[in-house]
Figure: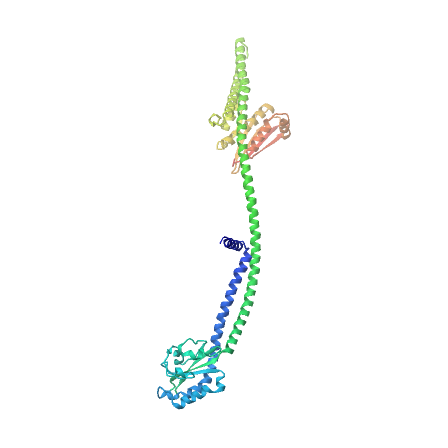
Length: 476
């Protein structure tokens, strides 16, 4: 039993392990074999029926000429006359007729045999079921249908037999008065049917083979295509798995990098905040203290220009105080970047320009500064830094006495124009030179504007003026 189980399992594995093409060949071959046998048998039965009817019709016309004239006595009674009986006996004994007609029977409509080559059944009554068709005027024919009780004699005869039933009519009234039955040798018919069956199998086999070949070619091509696509899909699947693994590894590395960057940023902000607090803040505080001492000394000395000195000192103190406040704000925001409440909110551009006027004592011509109030805080902060840096450059480096700031806005861009009447020595080359010297004012301006997706252009007219043109997209 164990060996048999292994054998069955091996066969099952071999079957399920077959390729699609082999499975198709096996299933299609079996299908066409069954189809050819079934269709061939069906065609043979149709041929058999056709041949039987045709032969029966020929035999009926032939036998009717012998039988019908010799049963007319039945029109007058239920028995054959002696003359009719003798004539039928002579017909059934004729050697020429006996070569193909093996037996003859005459039936009454009720199933009684009134004449038979087999004398033992004469006068007996049998089931009249097979007489139904001839009693309706039709010819009935059957091949090897000898299982009825009245066919005992015919079953003893050698070879295949087919029986034919024909209606026998009255010459006077035309009514059916009896049924004639005769049996013929079916050896030739059998050979014809076998030949027809063989030919039908050949034709069906050839057609099936052609169809099978065409299907085989299509399935082979389809299988080849499927195999190629399956291989490509597997390759794509493997590549996708590799990409997923690589993505996961990169994601892990990015996550580690993000944590490292956060830590580095935290340490950087802490250090810069401490440096600002402990460096520039201390120095600015020292400046304020010294300015107070200078003011006290000047007042105590009773100098003639004490009022003017005092005013200049107060302006300087205010600037230093503002610078100290800003440095401390930057220091606090860097040192505690996680708490945004500690960071100073960006001021309005108009307020920043007002602070510049107060520090410099120079009046700035303004136009549409309020257009910047609706910008994002980060954008407003960066833009404000750039504008103040531009104003400081005009005041400190170009000797300008007139400065203007003009804002213009379209649906897509915001432009800022800073113009002065200075010496016009500021240019693109000057910006590059300041960067090389380590001064980051002008390069820092450009860096801030470019970080917003915008541009900064410098137009200098030596000896006359300088114009800074700033343009930023509004999506920022």
